[in-house]
Length: 259
Image (cartoon, rainbow, N blue to C red; front, side, top):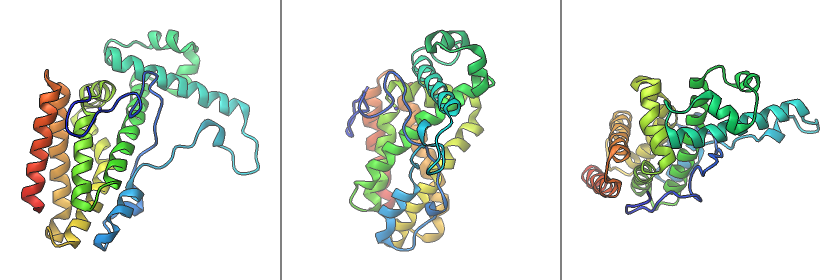
């Protein structure tokens, strides 16, 4: 998402580790819509955050036994994603072959193509897992903040910090925009982050620190700004300096916007 900067680093305890184990799933639901009172911002952040992922052994309805074949298939899928996450992060998308993933994961080609019809489909699943963990950490940082402006700052600084994590850097900010294309990459990010931003900005507007009619446009502008800073960090030869400059820029921007 290696750990320099003013907000601390994402290490083996903070993000995808060497095995790339998944975090939680993302995606705003109807609760991610703007709130109506400034005191609701923390609940809005919590509800707009990633939902808990259902594990392989939790697919059956209450009282039913999980089908062993289904559970085995979910375990194989998880193993493939974990191995592919590590390999994509270490080698990059172009230098990671399906054959290499198969050898490392110890599964058959048929098993892989049962879950992922192509290398790009496997990579998309990996991006989703890494993004989910990324989003969970951003929500956690924002939820601990004292007020909506501080929550916005905490979330943005977490994004900048995680852009320097080797896994997040390579998969989310270097390979994903190129593999999926700019428009699709942006839409994947907006699907989760935009609703969260609007919720927090609505609370800021409720406090009288910005005009309510600007909330939607401001959400797009701020998301674009923090993503651009994250891309700069991910591509920088001096990530520590880039993180510090990015954090200072975000602080200056938010100070000028909201005081």
